[in-house]
Length: 313
Image (cartoon, rainbow, N blue to C red; front, side, top):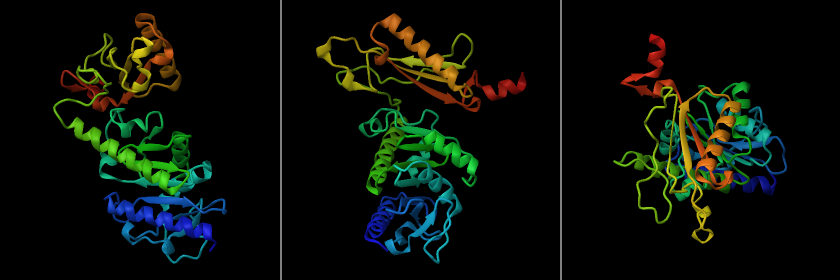
């Protein structure tokens, strides 16, 4: 074993132990993997059947991107591990470490339709860098692996809906720190959501209520609703500079039924941005539009879910 692999094993084993210490483990499930330096196509992953606290540098298993053992280890590996991790390692050379967990706050966040809100410093680290992947059951097939890789793209992580979270980094330390930020952001947001006032973005000096989603329907029925606060600029407070004299522009939140195509959403956000600039002034670059897609099972009018309205029509 060369020295670079030995160092990678030590770092990866430390990440497993720290995850267990933080309560991020899920008995023998979930995985943290790291590419083996100098060996393209090979990476290290935990032995299936061991707790995170039992993982050490010497018992990590070296596998290829198809999950086949290449080091003669007596330990088995979990097929879902290399279905997720192998696909990402194969697709992104920069993803030297892939960290997928079922953390308490991460799993709770994965059930929230609007995802992570830009409401804390920890969350702002993830602004524009966090994707989503729909739940498809146990990740075992090549087809889902391709969709997961496409959803990740060049982002730093994913919310795996109704499942957990995933981060990637050029080092084990980077992927671990990203998971720390994501877990802290999720914890803060979900605790705030449990309080009497829903969480919403603020900027320094703003004494009004936090911006929150509207619950009003559109004239065409509750297919989409939007809310904004033209006095705040929470998603990028550094752009609100009093010395410039520029009037802060809004962050516009839109809730809509899922199912629109990328082209429809592209045209919609363009039209909303143009309307905001035309009405309020400013530049298109100063307008943020956040889209939150909801299933019809999560939207009701008059006490009736829209999924049931369709069935009765």
